Image (tube, rainbow, N blue to C red; front, side):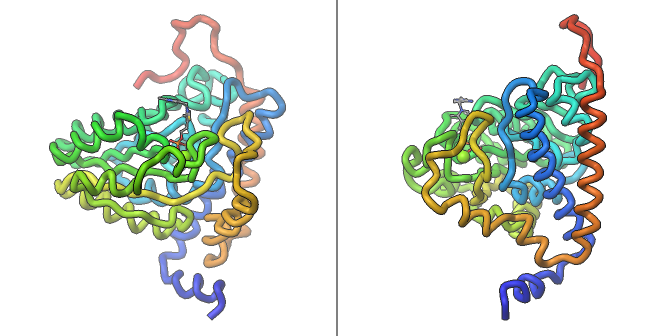
Length: 319
Ligand SMILES: Cc1ncc(C[n+]2csc(CCOP(=O)(O)OP(=O)(O)O)c2C)c(N)n1
Ligand SMILES: [Mg+2]
């Protein structure tokens, strides 16, 4: 059986769900390409940390969440936001510092919050999302909700990580910890700064943990469905280590010269979008529609007004 046939055989999945997962991943990819273009034109204020390459993680996890659940993302958070259904126009306007941005143009790329779409925040502090989601899980315990923390491999070396996982386990909190292991913390290969297996750090606390292929959206979705169900049922927190890779530099100024020779090409072979595309019908129509959407987003964002310079003026809805 060829690889394409094998992936087609696996695709006894709901075709509508497959298309929706593809649409969301593609929206994130094209959104990030567009942010980079706009950044180079001087339109994006502050810095950016793009999510390109890691789309399957946010999309797979967020696809199994319910309305009462909550998510904390990182500074690489455009993907987390879009996977949750944050309006792409509001997000792009935010990055361009416009009053119509989801935070009134005052948060920029790294600190987006959109409570209406379950996003309790994106955090510039490495590991901040772990603490925020743990706190949310404490509240959600009474509301049948689950809190998800997305964070990187580097964040597992922060004090928050040990403190919060311990707290969540002891108090059986409905939290799902999703470590996006993209092999680097900023410019440092993770194995140079991380002792042992990341997953084992959760396991040693008695937290159910697994390592999955984070570039396979179905693997992510299935692992997340199980973890979220366990957390919701009152059995306490779960941990997922999703192995993935970022296709671009850490942030705007990083050409990624520390990558091992051939590494980027190898991971591009495992591009989560390509892998899903091989197994679905109707991808072209989705691609045309996302392309049109992106063009419109850019036109609207560039034409949108900036906020008032008055720091007390609030153009956005206070959550
Ligand atoms: C507490 C803290 N320390 C250092 C930094 C600087 N910093 C920003 S991103 C980053 C690397 C984090 O790596 P990882 O957690 O693997 O996430 P990734 O960037 O790979 O998504 C560092 C050290 C920070 N923002 N916050
Ligand atoms: Mg990392």
